[in-house]
Image (cartoon, rainbow, N blue to C red):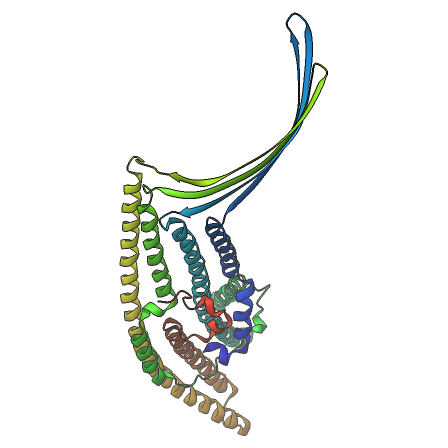
Length: 432
């Protein structure tokens, strides 16, 4: 994988898991899903409530005489309720909340897998871009040296003023191009740092070379064969679609029971005491009350709302089935195409390495001849300029191969970057 050749990238991937904006958002989604699961399971637990009150009352009676009465007292009570039989609707709601939490975990893993792929690709792109900046600066240096020689010739009178216009304008255009290339590189680095959750990514931290990757294209057939054998439904997104389908079944089950009678158990216990004073007489009393029993609640007609809920649940499930099939078909086709592209990239890399070997050998011989005095420095610079161009092409070929290879490894579910995540984020805990 690219991070095996580029240690700096490995650290970035580890940081991105903890600090990148995308993964921080996924952490929030995980917390919301956990809260949803707890809320969904709470409906299965008994409800418990208590109450307390204290009151003072007074009255004055005028009927052939006058009298007053006062009373004061308190009341304490506790109530317990527990659903008994809801035709599985409450259990289905709790199970659906659990599935939603599993979906959030798998989406977290899928988001990290996708983010890792993007960070790998763009990091390789930054290296190639830095090589391009180096090449542009070297060409500018050569152009400045050439113009300096022509300026000396102009001062000596061997070159006319008209002949100097084009080189001067050409150098200004080249400087503008180099400035743009440099600024684009700086912008790309800053954007990359934000995506990865880094404080900054300096130009010096980007290597100027992509090491020659080992040709692992032969393993691509084995990866594809294992993927086809296990089926794309075992991938992270495939498992997510399975969870959605299970949620669809539960939604239909819940909707189907809307017009069924629901049974619950309830119990209460209360204690009240009071003290009353009337016509000089004081009396006290204490009352203990309790009750328990089973109640039924039956909605006989809800304006066809239950029918609409069932139709909606079935339509949603059909939509999930359609999207799942499209995903499975597309993923299988993409995996086969990537396996082919890995082979093409390996062939292109082999040719690029041959060009690189020739360019390196030419520079080596030219440097030796320069030391012997048999070749001009300008010729060596021209050879080096060509070598830089070849280096750019070779680095691009290496980046292309690593990109295609890592895309294939990631797509078929063999990406080692996911080993940093809990197993529950990668596999269905409820079974297939």
